[in-house]
Image (cartoon, rainbow, N blue to C red; front, side):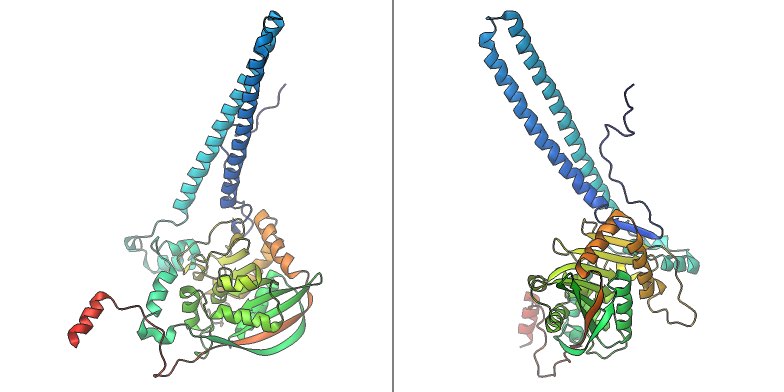
Length: 451
């Protein structure tokens, strides 16, 4: 008795979303939908190669038929049998070829349909204001508690990009004090510490660094099997600090609107002064605004031409509009009660090297503590989530965490150097301000009319 065919045999391949992993909702990576779709297309290409090979076999069989015909009358019975056998074999190969063409066409159609569905589902339709009417305070509060990146994006137009709004606004001469200014660094101290380079402990170190509230970053040198590797910790927004702190509120504008054009060179200088050499592997870790600066490293060609950025870890950071250069892995931690990751209006891309993990547990701010931007944005919550990521057997997470560990190694005694970043003060009245946009024809005519 023949074995029964598996369920779904003969149907077009169907990519599958990753299974839920406790409170972790996982998107992207090697088990992500996008990579599965890439694999579908690659499979269709391999089928096309087999089809071409079968066409070659058919042509070879046809030549054999032609070469047998002169011998047909030498032995008519056996000659006919031979020619018929070759002809039948050629027809069978042709049938297989046609079936493979149908399968390849079906796979490509599946790829096209899934891509269209993913494109539609990438952003839910924007909510209309009339959908909020009558919801009352309880409804609005419930909405506030569930401001995930995707739900937040439902309020934002499809063509919105944070830089599209922030950059033109800050380029105004009236807002010169909020425009980026050169950032210098000062070495604060250098110590030898026992560092456990896990994602969770890296985020906890980052929380302690953030609490200093003075614009400091940490550069950690690891010994990874005899070779140096580096980690850069970049804190989130530090609002109650001097205007010279590049991680103040103004720093959000530089990160989202100007691609961290002054912070990225400062990070590169800090690495050099800490001892990093050209080509050394680097991991960048950042929370909130710091996560945006960290991801901006991944698209800065000058930085990447000097250092080998291998991995970026962000927590609670709006980085959907930043596209890393190929080969750089990243993991983005988000929380269902944290609206900040959606503030840029873009969903994180789902690619082989990029994984987004949304934490779905309910959290509250302890009594008496400052809620800040909400309990979902708290770094300890993200550190606890990173522990779950490390313990997960999900294929995407296992591959991503292995990439992180492959750079930083097993840990142990490491050199830790802290640098203070300082933004240049506002230029005096006589100094030239950042040039604004060129005058329009209308502006020129108006000026001419006043002379």
